[in-house]
Length: 156
Image (cartoon, rainbow, N blue to C red; front, side, top):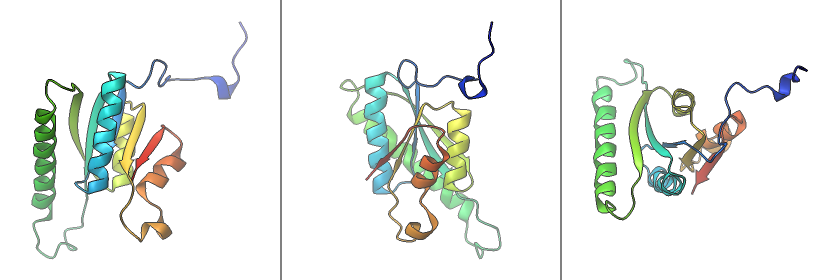
């Protein structure tokens, strides 16, 4: 038997029969909610698991100036879960989608990379950045695309 060249060896094959896990980043922004809805449609059509991921920001304790930041990010996560549950109830019996909600801590890019790795994602869906500053620094979506580890869909 001949040995395969290094570039042809694969330790994990993604998407052979369509995606099995689709990760969608949500943060409560309109574009992230559109991304979740788009990913939900993909998951339904592909019979894939929709993994909705909220990345809770890590803010140094001194930067918060006494504000209860951890509690605020927990509230955001709880609000997102409630909103997602309401949305799934509205389409119950019409569309069935298997979904899970996950929270990770850190900056959005590293949190989504960790989520996609841990959940063995076949695809990542995110909303387009609504921040003007990302033209200079680079948005999470652009950084995910440049990582080149998963197909990435950016929803406006």
